Image (cartoon, rainbow, N blue to C red; front, top):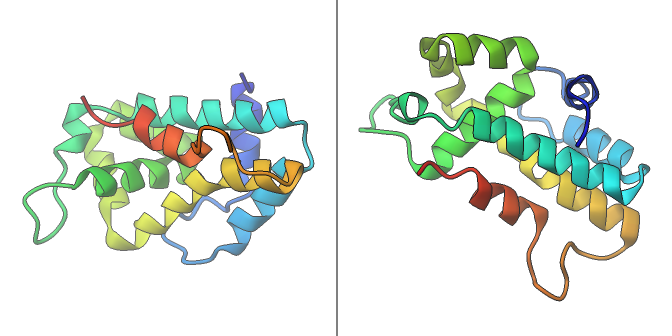
Length: 150
């Protein structure tokens, strides 16, 4: 698994602003990862899944979007992605105080879900093939299944 400091150093390339509607930081991170050994790309995906799982808490899942009764499963996943993209301080704040999660449920922060594509795209760029071609499973699909509230 990727060291925590290394994971956050890579995530820092995204700029810490999950609400920004710009794909370029995600493309940069994808490019940097694609130049690493495949094992490192997979380590990044596993570290990301672990961080998202740490945020998989019922109290956070019960957050409400304006005009909605609750967050959908997708909205909850995207909000957790926004926390990760915002960086380690944001993650620590949300884990310490669930009220800090509210700002990550804004519609604009949903663009942070782009981080889910980074490992698969980096793998494809590095190897020239999709993830799990015989099984038809992408790393993003694995990440989404691994972090659903139970």
